[in-house]
Length: 133
Image 1 (cartoon, rainbow, N blue to C red):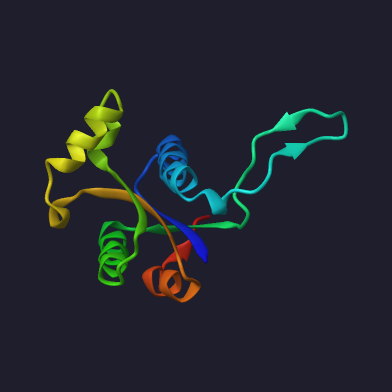
Image 2: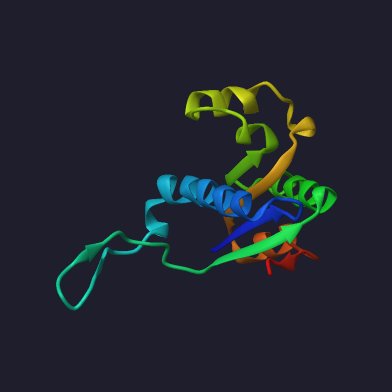
């Protein structure tokens, strides 16, 4: 399995960080096996667990992000999180879901997505995208 995040290149730095955090929370919150055991330092302090595997972060312009989204949908990726431009304006979780529900899939103004799938599937979805710099 492989985890990947795709962010639109025209986002501000704070938006990139915010979108990434929201997107990966969807995967962490719904796929228990993807998260490891809690961390403990040498003094006995406990810390939250994190993903067991690396998260690859890519960047794409609007068209390339749309292409990656379409590839994910065509390949039946079930563990897919999306973030649309409208979500920057919504005040809470219920409003977020309503904003997404109001727009047909082909009209979503995507600014980011995260997916977890078999390695070959993820590689096909992110084909030709550059790693985030």
